[in-house]
Image 1: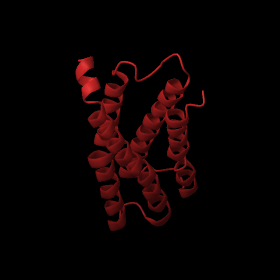
Image 2: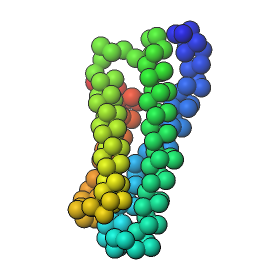
Image 3: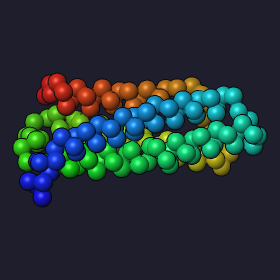
Image 4: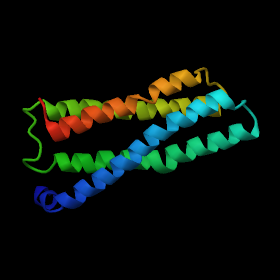
Length: 150
């Protein structure tokens, strides 16, 4: 299996990067939708239904599959012998940031359900601040992998 993974490395890496890009696009966009939903939409109206549909489809059709693919291809990369030196700190900082990104994804999924159930208690400012979380985690991930400062 390790030989296959090593042979398929360029393809696995390419699909991992594609999945990460799709996942990040959703993680940047969904909280922005929440900002507008919280600030400009009254619960129960036509615009509320529209926002709920957009949020649900973004999460289920794009973000969830992209997150799963990111994890799948990422774990395949980790399985390639010699690719990751676990005695260094950078793979651990990357892993922690990926877990943080996954937590943020789940946080967004719960917030979407809040809107769907008419129980959103957060304002646009909260969603604006939370919208910065994936950017910070992305910085940690990219610097950890590319620069390897640790």
